[in-house]
Image (cartoon, rainbow, N blue to C red; front, side):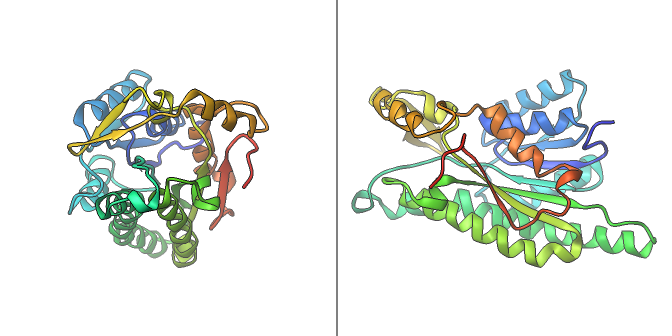
Length: 276
């Protein structure tokens, strides 16, 4: 039997990269998944890939920072699959510079996507999770262990030059995680975070200096790490290489399995042995 058979999950930012791998992994283990991306097409492509592999998924496109998105995201799970068991807050990007050059817009944008959006999604999910717990108890049924996994970063644990906005947001994610673990334990919900180290994605693969950009809500955001810096970072990783999106997704999956039902309020570092 697949480990997540009958479960329903929502994964933000799952049209591409790590999020896509998370959605695919959860679906491969039996979960029905709501796939989100800022753009509709990548979300639809991930849904199609899940369905082609024999899984079930629906798309919920849109920005996690939009007013009302969190409620729509949660409601899509209810309307499509009748419940909500797994929440993965993954959506995000980086917009880097040193503090003296950072604008309020840069600061606000990164805090909004990495910290405010997960807060809103979890707030929207609370009535659904509370009602499901009360319904199970009233029926004399066991309350299933539900899962929240918030994506953090080693930058949130130890800081990173040029990323004061991102590091602050990811540190905030850890505080959010620890607090919600205390608040939601009574619902039999585990709340954990995964702090990624350097993972190979479209944000890191493009060489810095090649003017590679991604477009996020009409903003052109520079991406990529130059070859010299990439080599230096890899030398600091005991496993000697950057991680893959599939490996990152596997770390999230661990915290969604029944084997992790007594683990809560923790941050799992997925960084190839790199320590702060």
